[in-house]
Image (cartoon, each protein chain N blue to C red):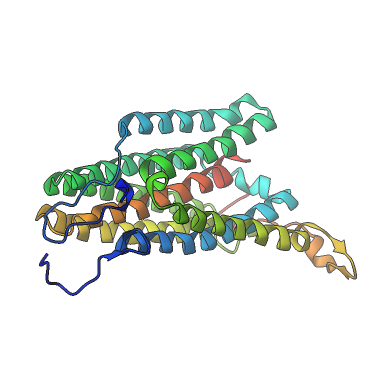
Length: 192
Length: 130
């Protein structure tokens, strides 16, 4: 954290730190990726009644539990952001560890859910619905996994009062992952 | 310089607060309550209620997360325009592609017959119809 480090951390023209601008830029590109999948799913869902029958096989309670887990992890992420702004690195790190725990819980539940569904015969090639299901949830799960890994790295630094501004940056990303799930949940688990 | 334009302080272990922090636990409680409503919606058995409680609440929840957790409201306005533009692109994609997907025929085109067939679930060896 030397002041002499030759890295530009602020773009005056952008009106915000470079890192935050970069995260928003990533999110903008992610909207197109997930938005494309969701829009495609809605097109097929509205025009194929078979989707209704296939969607009846997803477990709403598991989806709801995972939604709750992600919402709660988002709470910890934003509390970590608040702690970082107050200069409390160890607390920010603890909040990020709890956020990571939420992400890992989400992935474990998802893996059990997928195992059950695959054993029941619902694989990615079973039907168009299941292709969308595994593609959308799989891509989202990869984002959760990536977020958890980055969060653990940021938390390790935050514990030592290093790079505290990154707590906010990984938080913004994590909330976006949460928002994506907020839309995937009703599409795949509720609208049957 | 507005409070949204403060930047991380390179020399300081912390950085300047740029955000007003609302009561996050209260917001989380509202989000959790909305989740309960969205899960309960289908039990009413009315399709319109299910759609409203599922997708209407999803939009409200997403707005609350973006505003209160991601703090889009205190970011420079162009960030909202950037994100909004991507959402509009998604809607344009839907508008342009949906006729091909959702209609059987149009001007000078018709889907081949095999595309009229609805996708059918194929159970695995140990699976079954569910």
